[in-house]
Image 1 (cartoon, rainbow, N blue to C red):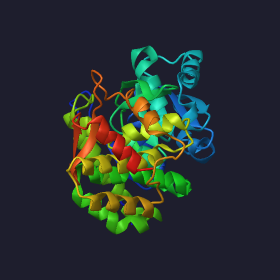
Image 2: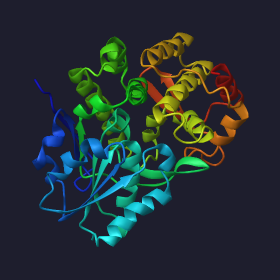
Image 3: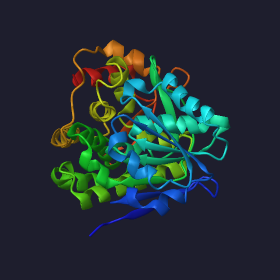
Length: 362
């Protein structure tokens, strides 16, 4: 029996939108068409996803002018030069302000499509159809869009909410095991920052989850998206509490930048970054060392790294972290745990403590 869920990201009348989660949603033509504003559609996907799902989406859109942009696949292509290709397609085919962009792919496709939608003619509609677990539970929800710069990840971007998010869990059947693990890092994150019962549930179900059990996966995605929606409701533009969604990300972004984007998958870098964040939380007296070990055990069962890359130095980490978007007035703000299931954004960690936490995780 299929299980389909619907959540709503509540951001007021002008910005609220639904998240649909379940099986066979790519076959639901009415659901997709009901969120298209005008008569023009531009589907943005990549060379990996296009052969798998592009025609399945296009067949619902015979009544529209449909143009397609197929991007190269990979984090290394998440650049302004790549976004220019989306603008080129829109302009060459006379797309107007009522056009709707459809992001069909993982987080890289979603971030770039959203950024193009936010900036084309100062803002047009877009729909998220995420095809990786990581994008389903994280980047497709909340309206963050953007591209990378050689000096820092996601340093160029805009907040631009989608019309809807359509999460078809059937697409996970074609997802490589490494990508599934990378997505599980973000699922685990939600339990750590805000939902202790969910964290315990993940621990109990990690083995069937890694085998992509359909019913458990719908539950994991739903609970992850609900946790994110709850935080976004409180702080849409990341002025304060929304930053807790970045547990492990400051350390993880340093890894991604230093290793060249794409060598470590985002979720892999976040996993190692969360270990450092919990290690620092322990050094500051917030959690027991057993909680660091508990996380490492869970990450290992999810086939994720628990140690930092040995070709990086502490000095390199600190230099890259000081470029993070959460740095204010030269002070490094980090997402740490007050306890498992409760995160806090703080600038109280000393450089000495941060340095020791990083050293302890090589």
